[in-house]
Image (cartoon, rainbow, N blue to C red):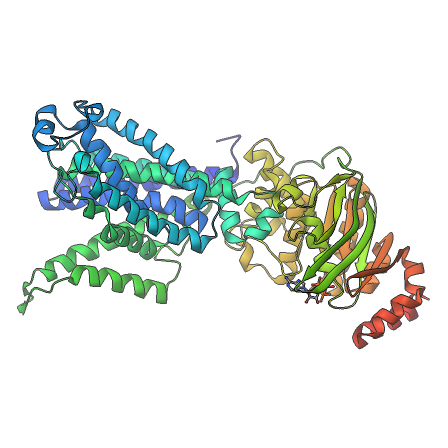
Length: 609
Ligand SMILES: Nc1ncnc2c1ncn2[C@@H]1O[C@H](COP(=O)(O)OP(=O)(O)OP(=O)(O)O)[C@@H](O)[C@H]1O
């Protein structure tokens, strides 16, 4: 286990525990269960493969998918056609194109072919999905489901259309279903703690924050979608060999609803949720099914009730959404290892060597108009490394917009932004971040559902060679910002001031040439603000990076900054050393527009004279 990050160690133990739990339950049912119980368990095992595949995509990206049921259908037909004995094929599929006829492959080989097709289909459809917002992508998966089932019905020569497709050898029983479910659970649990898994979750948590540390959201969506399509198609292929006969409608809305309901009941955001969801709903469905058929229960005659099972499932889902939105699992993994032993964290990495890669960040005549209003107009600024440049100005002066223009969160309407003379304008934010520009946000953008350590590690992974190195670098920055003890807490549960510091740690771990801080001391008490000032001054001294600081605390600006630029109504009205700027009558005039700022400026002049 040495050489692995803490997260991966925890994931491995969780994965082994879940696989073991599934194997033990299946073993008990195989040994002592009735034939009926074994059928239910086999069906549940195969459903678990489907639900886990769905969780791998939807849980990590936050995009609810309705399309997975359709892919299970494709998998079922692929395995069905490829494994069907030639004699049955000759009667059941008389018009099957010669190219597809007479293979009669083993289940394993047919599953391999299905996986290959799944990769191609996953990449092709994922290339579209990754360009859509989460809600549009979700609707697109619904369209995919309809298209897939329509094609399956239409491809009569291969699928027999709406007629039952029969004659598939029944090679899947409880043992195969259990093994498949265990493997699916292991892979899904481990994926979450891979580099791609973390990047995907970060983008789902806060896409803008993720782009600011260089993450291309599309990469995670494509990777998790393709993997989950493979899982869904294999689940379908195994199901084909379990049930032996099926129709396209078996892989339509009912299955999409059933698998989604199971996942939501268990908890969308963890592989444990998929396991708990399938377990709990299988039991519920079994009870509901008995009631649906009617009969005498505890001496009471109950008439058959059509659709009772679906209604119970829907009700269970609504109840969970209402009372426990994160699902029965609470939305998190077991983290058994962390519960059982006190994990010794790896030592923080030493301070990195070397100076910033770039020397100068500059804007030339940069401007931004919003619906006719000039938020920033014709600003030309030089922001060298080795200096702290303060950007001040009254509310609405355009400070945040200027940072957004530099960091790629907004595209300039005019002018440009340059790093060592190379233009940045037009690059998406994640590419700007990769040029060595890190930033924090006025309205904090940490990843709330990830741990404090994961927040920083995700950023570190862009530049560190492996997860362990990324963890050690992350721990270094957490220690610097006084957050070492908070490493395992969920970022969303931190108090405001600590979340601000976490954002700074996340930015610093990328070893940027330029650090843009948008009101880093907002919400901090004076002690925290002073500590932050010491840290920033130290980072500037040790690393020689350039810091750009937007701050309303003028005392902090005047003490920390080497130069100060003043914006008013989007325009740069003056720029220079703090003392000169403070004495500039244009600055006093700009601040007089806002009474509280004018008071702050007056107080500051009194204090520093
Ligand atoms: N996305 C947007 N759409 C429309 N107008 C915007 C947008 N972003 C900023 N603005 C406008 O641009 C102007 C500058 O806003 P900006 O947030 O950059 O100022 P600021 O100096 O950072 O203010 P504050 O100190 O209050 O944070 C404001 O008038 C604001 O309303």
